[in-house]
Image (cartoon, rainbow, N blue to C red; front, side, top):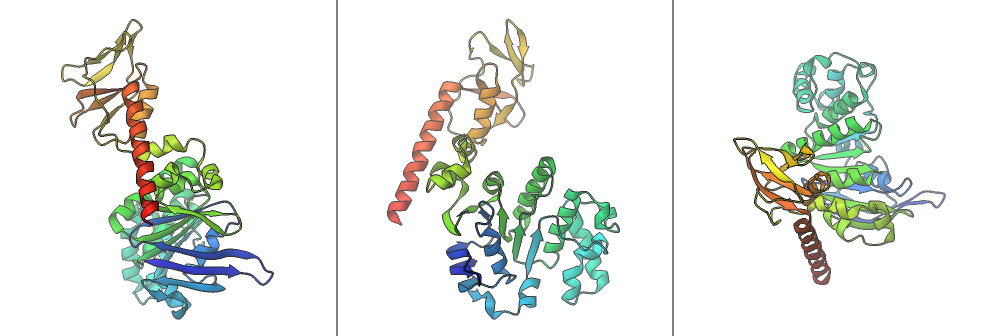
Length: 353
């Protein structure tokens, strides 16, 4: 666990970058610091590994004040990934990844051998190991940066806007890769971003920083979307927060209609095995625009209902056979119920707290 206890960073000119920040980063989770430029999120991150020293307060890792540890020793036990990867341009990919293990006394041969395994783990082919950073794409460089941060198997990983320098498609791939890796490794990750969508997608907990180095809200993404703490947080998460919040809502309790239920002159047509082919009407066969399985979230189901020419989403079983329809009017009731239950639960937590 990483704990901030009334941490302040004040510069000699009087500028306050972080103002009495108190929060706990849970072990094995991804905690995201998000907010506009100049709000103190990167400063807070860099105080964890002592790249910046706090003016007041304490930062503890597993109960131990980081300022009691030698800087070099502390940093070798904390992985660090920055925007643009920050690779050594004169070293090969393998030697970049092997840097920290070699500093810790591992032989170069063993470190490079482990580095090959790490390249595979982050989704890169081994034959890239002998290339130099300039010979890689931006997304590949960022993956190497993640591999290097993981090379010494640190329990804590700091990521400072790691995906902001790549295009949206690559960024999506890297976010998926991070979630996959976290599922395997269970690191304690603190990630800084200015992108609220990235924060909501990646974070188990999200710390929203406001201008003036103020912690505006610290909550799970679903709670952030359902009940912003103030107007600033509401503006940051956006006017479509209700739709995005459906991504955290369970769709298993939605009312299902039978597959043969007709809708405004359209009927679901299936093949001999019961797999959906499309909506049959006077215009011919129209597409279903996709299907969903049991366990899908409400956002997925809502998107399918909106796209469907019949205004209905098709649920399929594990073999892809249609086993029910979700109609717009039934979906609306489920959305209403889920939001009411979430807000009630949040209000109960606040009362207990």
